[in-house]
Length: 148
Picture 1 (cartoon, rainbow, N blue to C red):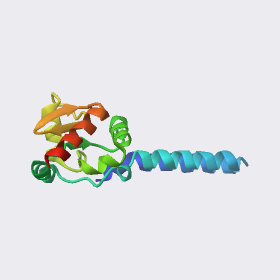
Picture 2: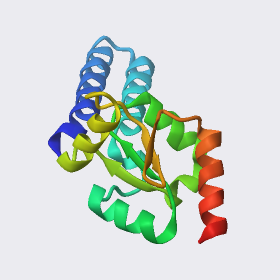
Picture 3: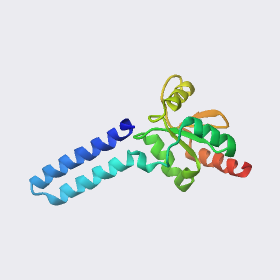
Picture 4: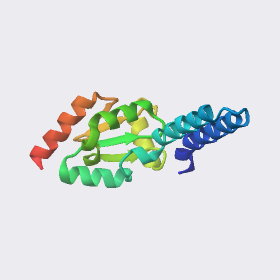
């Protein structure tokens, strides 16, 4: 779990150090800007931006029941952020699995991607799709809603 918070913590520490240096130099506006910018980077690269993550086993169980896709992701992944923001509110309806919190999920992603932990990997009806277009994911979610 600590691994997921490493990058946000580093962004926040760097922003705090740069802001303190700017404040010490008498540049309060620049220091405040740096602090806010790095805090925003920390939040965007944290698990806070994503819906609550569940285990791979729980995601498979839920997906079998409701037909909704499973998204394997990890904090700090720009492509995962892109998918999350392009899906907007619909993202909450997907089953999100953080591969850094679930070793079984990481193994499943490696099996689907020639040994690489490439995310986002979206599983629809048992078939993995690596870094799919967000519009395609929206379409799959809509189809799951019509079936369920």
